[in-house]
Image (cartoon, rainbow, N blue to C red; front, top):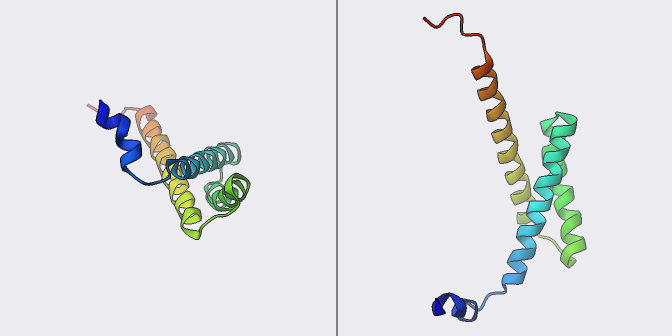
Length: 101
């Protein structure tokens, strides 16, 4: 238990910066997912994630990186794929079972 308490001091990395980046990515993906649910358009949701991440990064800590924009778009693409996959599973489960013997 003492090792976990001292881990923060052993690793000379700023965890606040990582926390802010993760928070920005979480907020960006949540808002882009809400846009996807409201508009039913995956392209608008996917393309809106980069500007949202850029705006939240500028508000949060005054700068952003290209890799963060690409990461936010990648996360949003993964979320869209998961939602599409769940919809396909639901449609397959709700399909009439006339051909099953």
